[in-house]
Every structure is written in structure tokens, then in C-alpha cells.
Length: 265
Length: 236
Image (cartoon, rainbow over all chains, first blue to last red; front, top):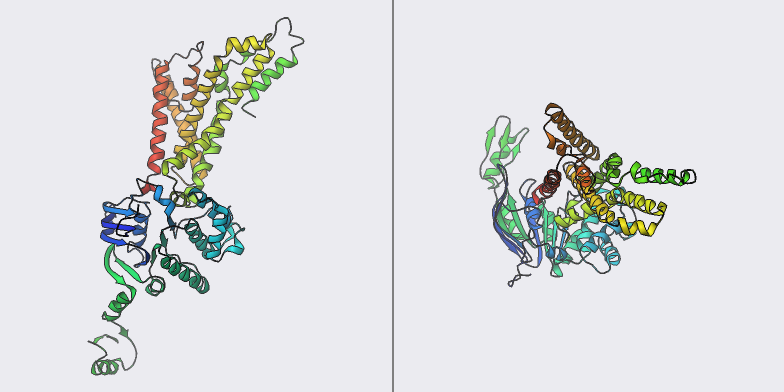
């Protein structure tokens, strides 16, 4: 199922629109092993791109292939794909272990109970495995979703905002885990709207703005692009006129303009 | 158990009064013919379907867990087939088992139980088909209605409204036009019972079997179409 050139996720001129709203426009990329960040502000099209990858919606135009298959027609590759949604729920009456084990069983894992415990251990929930998910915090539920995506040791992982709702220590654990998964040769596509989060997990990044893929490359390269971009600030207070003059004289500002009581730099 | 009530009552009365009625034994099937059994317990079947179906579909949509299923190798049609069996098999307990109990009871009280089985065995496939017809119909309609909402209460209300309104419309048409014989096919609550009754040769409903069958296929087909449409990827 894997393409000969190592491509596991392929987007070819993919567009997706809902009525008059364009969620994704003419996006093309291909991903092999390793972690790739999907970066963009809220509404940029990250979730739509992940939904298309996961076979949860049909592209309005273009082609999506994961492990060489169109998941809308062929469900078999799901046994080799792990998906952790940000917004989807869990069965509140099931324990964490029962949840992960049930989904592992549906994916054909031989010993789902053991696989569930191993995956819950990876996300730091081994001690809470027997507790019902309904009593979990948002962060714990996020980690259960991550565990169910890992239990069957998939080749491809689609993680939608996996750090949402986690405290700093949990974030560190998950960041390390995602990096480790990439180093193992799995293809991980992880979405976030925070660059510094993505760059801790992913050496490569795809940047979406208003449904368009505007940049792709190493996170360091994207960071440099952002740093090179001119920015504007509004300064308020006494002496802003003098400060503006000093900034221009020192070569620290390209231009300054007085806007009422404030100075735009 | 409630669905078995009519059979248990008739058989119980037959057992209690067997001593007194030895000269002219009670004919159980005259009191409760096989063809009429499902219409006697029709309301129980309806209530069972109302209670059962929403619990099979609404929680997954409400709790947002559908994507968890579909992120495994479980396909949408497999999911729906599983839910359908989850509704139809328990319904079969209500639509089929009570009639089998009645058949067993009648055979038991017959002068020659084995002779009765030999002569009347043809009732068994009729009962099986009648039970399946009802279970499939009520499961399909109840699931189709439940698929339209994530709230159990709305699903129950919608199901009741659909069945009551269709019956009311059909009755009004029959009242307005005496020659509108086929209008009773439009009573969605009783349609499968009408079709099932035609399986017994001595039943006389007026409306031909083909009309019941066409009505049945249209409703079950429409329910299946609603279900498949509601579980298209774009609808999740």
C-alpha cells in the first residue's frame, strides 16, 4: 500500500469547499516518514486537511491518498493509521483501558488489553487506566485519544491539536512522545496554531493561511521567514515622537508615523 | 414478557378450565388466531422499537464518538448493519417468540401433540416470515428517525409523530373516500402487520397483498436511504 517512493500521505491539488466557503484551496504536498507540523490560525483549514487525510470528508477537487489508498473507498488501511481528533468525544461510561482496548480490537490487534495498557503507559495514564473516562479532565481525555491512536502501532498518525488542554509537564511528555514516534520512522502529521509548539515536535512544517498552503519547509526556515517579515507596532505615551526619531536614527525602524496621540512604527 | 401476555393468558385459561370444558374444549385459536396475534400486541412492538432504537444511534452522535468507530477498519455500512441487527434481533424476540409459544401451547393441549405438529408445521415458516417482516420494518423506521437527531427524546417524539400522523391521514382519506381501499396501506404503524396477516390463507383484509408489499418496500427502502444518507462522510 505504501507508495514506492516512501510517500505515505499524498495531497494532489486538493480543494474542499462547503457551499460558498472555501476551507482548502488547491493544496498539494506529500509526506514520508517523520513528523510534520500543520500550522495555521483557527479556521485556516488544518482540521479540514486532517479530516481529508482521515477519510472523514470527500475532497471537492483533487486527490487524497493515505498509504496509497482512498480511505473513502477502502477501509483496510485504517488498521495501519492512528487518528486522534481534538473535538471528538469518548464513551464516558467506559474506563480508559476499555476504551483503548475496544478500539484496538476493532483494528484487529491480537491482545487489545495489553496493547491498551502499553499505549496508556506511553501517555502517562497507566495509573488511571481503570477509571471511567467520564470523570477525566480535558487533558486526560486528550491523552486517552492519543493512546487509542497509538495502541495498534500505526505507520501513519494524524494528530489534531494534541497539546490542547495539557499542562506543561504533560505537554513535555507528549512532545517527546511525538518526536520519538517520528524517529521510529512513522509518518506523523500534527496540527497546531502555535509555531513554538510545532517546532518542538516537528522538523518540517506546512503552513496554511485561509485554506491555502503558503509555506512548507523546515521549522527553522519558517521561523526565519517570520522573523524577517516587517512588523508594525503602535506606541502610546509621552515622548513617543522623540522615541520614533531615535529608532529611525538608529536604523531600528523602517518608518514611523504619528497617528493622533500614538506613534505607529 | 408483556408481548407473551396474550398467549399466556389464553393458554392459562385453557389449562385452568380444561377439567370443566372436557366435553367442549376451548378452541384457543378461535380466541386468538395466529394471524391476529401481531395486531393484538402491535402497540407493544411499537413501544419496544421506540425505546430501543434511539439508544442505539443517538448517544454516538451526541457524544461525538462516531469518528472513533470510523477511524478503525469499521465502515459506515458495517456500523449501520451492526446497529440494525442490534434493533432487529431484540424486536424479533417480541414479534416471533410469543407466536411460537402460542403454537407450542396449542400443540400441547391438542389430543395428539405430534399429530398437530405434523398437520400444522406450515404455520412455523409463516410465523418466522411474519416475525421478520415486523422486526425489519420497525427497526428500519425507528433507526431512520433516530439518525436524524442526537437527542433521544426528539427521536421518540419524531417516531410517534410519524406513525400517528400517517395513520390519521390514512383514516381521513378512508373516511372521505369510501372507495380508497388502498389508503390503509398508508397507516405506517400497521402496514407490516397488514402485510404479515396476508401470510395466513384465511385472513381477509380487502387490500391485496401486492399493495401491502409495495407499501412495505417503499417504507423500508426510504428508511434505508435516510440512514445511508445520514452516515455519509460529509454528515459526520
